[in-house]
Image (cartoon, rainbow, N blue to C red; front, side, top):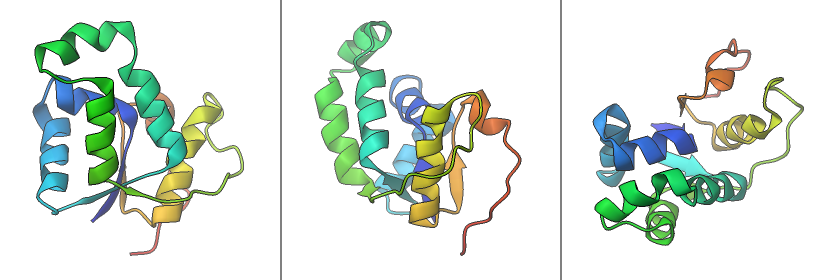
Length: 126
C-alpha cells in the first residue's frame, strides 16, 4: 500500500507512539510504502527543529538529523509536480496532496485539520 505520511504523523509516531508509530513500524516491515518529496522532507526537518520537540527527541536519543536520515531511507522520495491550489486555508498543505498524486498513493495519513476537512475529489489509481 502506498501512503503519504504528513510530518505531524511522523513526529507523533516517534515521540508519542500509538497508531502513528504503528504506521512507521509497518513501513519498517515493508507492509506499507511511505512516499515523500523534497518539499515534505524540508517540512519534516523544519518541524523537527522546533524547540518544543527538543527535549522529547533528546529523551529518546534522537536528533532531527538522525530522524531525517532514517525517514529518507525508509520512504521513497519522488518528484511531485506543483498542483493548483487545493487547500484554501494552508497552501503549504498542497505539497502533501501533490506527493500523493505523484505517488499514486492509496492513502494520506495526517492530523492536519485543513487536510482532514477536504472532501476527496480525486481517487488515485490502484
